[in-house]
Image (cartoon, rainbow, N blue to C red):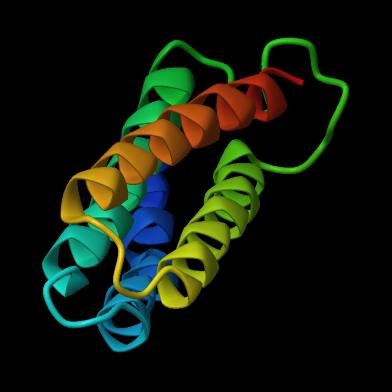
Length: 124
């Protein structure tokens, strides 16, 4: 039991740098005045992914509830959240001059969509 916890911790730390690459990318792609919100969005997505993975692993479903996919839920979640972060960064890059409130609303909406889609994919 103890070895499994250590292995989970090492895999969590080992792949954290991949997630943290999104924050400087977010700072570089967003326009001035929206960089902080964009970086917070990327960080919140990373945190939400890790919380989902820990929850599912904690209740004993490291391959998902249904077992239809054999990959680990962390990898599935990283792909889904990576897609949504990339989508948000593209939208933020091409919506220069927009209102900050709309930017924040879009980030919340995309984060909720990413959470729902990743939950569905992780359950498989």
